[in-house]
Length: 287
Image: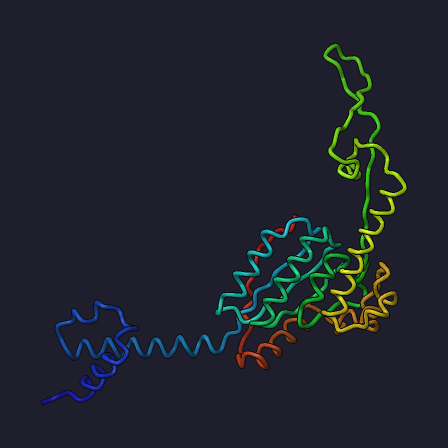
């Protein structure tokens, strides 16, 4: 007698053979083979159901000054290309840092949110370069007592005239360091170079203001703010969370739990994925 159940299993396996392990063909018994196939298909179905009921959220902390983008940009790229990750929660408590690394991280966040939602929860501080990073997210939440903003550029130049040294006989003296360069502009920011001329100081001030223009224009694009009114929100002031909300720098006042709920909402709307959140901590360094 033909076992039609086993026959149906065999036909189904022939259709799906590319997804099955090769060693199933070694079974001598058709019944054993069919039973194995049934278990494999059932397990695959259960796995699919489990995955549908879980929402995987990567929690990425930015909790220091931002001076090296390498690690964070790499991790964000990995999260962006990992289809098992449905959303990214950036947990920011940072005073900012260098313009270049901050900008590169912000661009990677912009790339991430094209594929999956990105929400920021601010802790104590999100200022300067850290806010440039946060501004690229889909949604920003902060507590009322947080510090937000400080959108501006600071350029410091230190000049040392003399360096102290200690001789082999224990005596102390002064060492004068001379710097030779192909152009006076090469040593404008060198601590042992000559004092800046008025022209060099003016050129450095112009450069600083240009960086500032790029900064506030980038924030204006990301947050949909009017760049013509940038002095209202980008004059390097630090704002409390509620004041930042009134200015449009953040989207709502709330907590970590509120940020998770908002991210789940965006994931459901954009990716049609819903279920219990699974929070996956990601270790990164920015300095």
